Amino acid sequence: MQTTIDQFIQIGELAKKLGITTRTIRYYEEIGLMGAPERLGGGTRTYSREDVLRLKFILKLKELGITLKEMQELAENFDTNQQAFGKITPKLLEILDAHIGKVDQKIANLASLRKEIVDYRGRIIDILQGKVSEVS
Image (cartoon, rainbow, N blue to C red):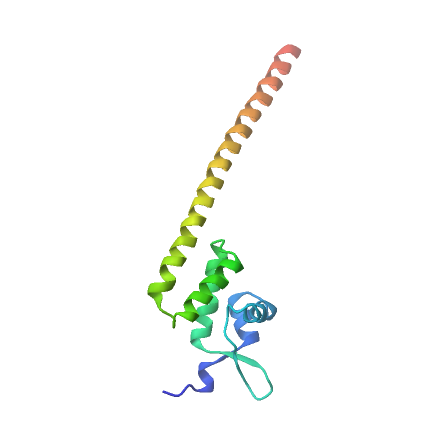
C-alpha cells in the first residue's frame, strides 16, 4: 500500500502536538533515536504514523527517567535485530527494573527526610510553646 501525503505530519505541527520543540525532534534524529525523516520538495521534514509512535515512545521513556544513552542502546538493539520485540523487550525490562530500584531508593530517602522534618518541626513547636508558657 502506498503512503499518501495526508498520512504525514510536518515537524512544526508534530512538535506542537507533542509539546516539544522542533530542535528536540532534530536532536533525537542526530543521536539516532529517530530515523531520517521524509522530506517535502523544500526540504521540510515530515513524519509518518510510525515515526510519531516512535517519538511518543521516546518521550514516555524520558518521562520514566530513562537516559538518552539508555534509549540509544535500546534503539541500537531494536534496529540491529530487525525490530525483533523478543530482543528489545528483555533489555527494556532490565532498564526499567534498574529505574524501579532507583525510585524505591529515592522514596526511602524522602520518607526518611520527611520524618526528620516532622521531628524538627515538633521540636520547634515545643520550644515555642515552652517560651509562650514562660512568658505567661
